Image (cartoon, rainbow, N blue to C red; front, side, top):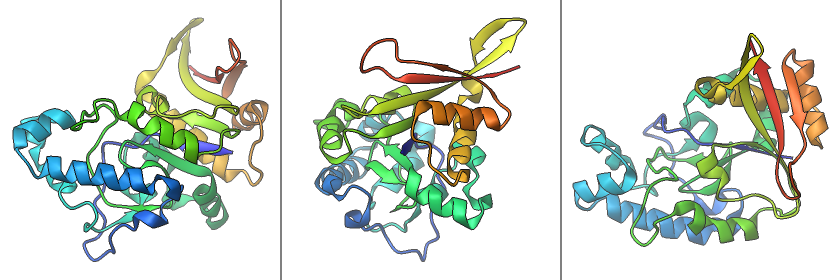
Length: 254
C-alpha cells in the first residue's frame, strides 16, 4: 500500500544547524536526475529578476521573501518532510503524537507528491521551499506532465494506492495496472449531500492517521472502507465507473 499525500504551501524551516538535503538518499532514487534538473532551474529562476520569478511561481509582491527559500536548495538545512510540511492535512495527521510503532509505519506507508521532488517518503529530509504544481518554470510549462514519464518508470505500476492528493498532484501519476482509491468528504444536512472542500484536507489527514495506526496495512478498497467505518465514520464505497478509473470512498459528516 502506498498512501499518497499532497504537500502543503505552509512549511516550517528546519533548524539552521541541520545538515542539507542528500538527493541520492530520497525515496525512488531513479528520480535523482530529474530532481537535480528541477532544483537547478528553480535556483536560477529565484536568483534572477524578481518580477519574472514571482510570476512563474504564482506569488504576489507581498510574498517575495519566499523566493529566498529557493535560491540555495542544496545548501539549506533539511528535516523530515513530515516536519517541514505544516498545512491542515499535516496538522490532522499529527505525526508527533503517534506512538513509536505507528510512527515507523508512517515512514513506510506515507509518501508525498511534490512539484519539486516528484514523490518522496514522509521521512525523507528536505529543505523548506516554494514550488507548486501550478508553477510555470522556464521550458517547463506543465510540471505534472514533465514529471509523468519519470514517475511512471520509477513507481510500481501495480501498486495499491490510497490517494489523498489534490487534483493538480494526482495528474502527475497513477499506477498503470494498480488499484487507486480516492477519499472525498461530504456534508449531509437534511438529506442534501454536498462536498465539504474546506474540510477535505482535514479529513485526508485523519484518514492517513488511521492508515498508519493500523498494524496490518489495508490491501483493498474494502479494507480501507472498513477501517474508516470502524473508527466511527459514515462511509460509502463506490466502485470505479469504468475500467482503469479510481474507487471512491465517500466520508459523510453531518
